Amino acid sequence: MSDAPYVPPKVWTWNKENGGRFANINRPIAGPTHEKALPVGKHPFQLYSLATPNGVKVTVMFEELLAAGHSGAEYDAWLINIGQGDQFGSGFVEINPNSKIPALLDRSGPEPIRVFESGAILLHLAEKFGAFLPTEPKARAATLSWLMWQMGSAPYLGGGFGHFYAYAPFKIEYAIDRFAMEVKRQLDVLNRHLADSEYMAGSEYTIADMAIWPWYGALVKGLVYEAGEFLSVHEYENVIRWTDQVGARPAVKRGRMVNRAQGDPKSQLRERHDASDFDLRTQDKLETEKAD
View 1: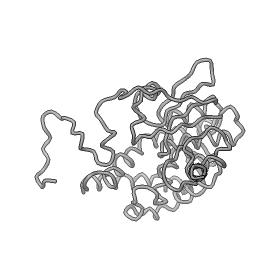
View 2: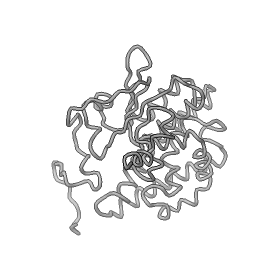
View 3: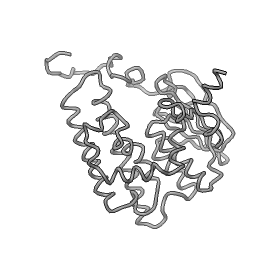
View 4: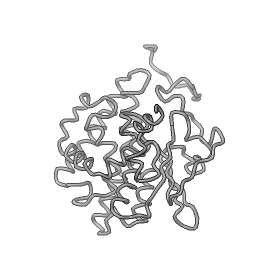
């Protein structure tokens, strides 16, 4: 790295080696890189995802719907390995032209419906099943406001702070300071709000909680970017209280396991096709079967 200040060229060109940990999957163009059809299971909903925070939002929603008695919400969850470029396969791009997980194919009606962007999927399912989205105008407005807050705020946490603090090939003080300041501001927004509110939209658990929890809950528990001490996350006591409350829900625990491909093998259900998979098909059991 040179000590000379960076002067942008008149015309930017792509350097494939630039981009840190995720350089191999980042590119300045869209569209598929290879032909690959997506698998299709037996259930009304086909989810193609990975247990990143955005993916967890949707698997938590499905598990919450099923726990609430909505049997029509049965789903197949297929693993999309973004490190290997699965999101650039032709079948995936047909559902999500933006090549980001999660992507959903709703086959519950006469014509399949593609839904992409995690917030859009949560809203689609909430409206379809009449669940986790209040009908009372004030609570509904609060739910949608906090859902959109998350969609607009999390890129500063992940693509901003997370990238420059944990994944960039070298540390840039200005970039880290800029995004650390914004992330702490966001945490303060949440902490002040949750001082007077049990959940994000009041006393009712909603899709706003499902959207925010995988990102900011993981952050205040020190589970992402190894940045808990750096950001003094212990200061946000109300966010921690809410995080623990949401995380204790059985459906949330199950949703967090689906499409997980790292960590404790007991916590990994790489594909989910039946409720029994949580007992029979976690990675530790599959590895034991393979060894035998």
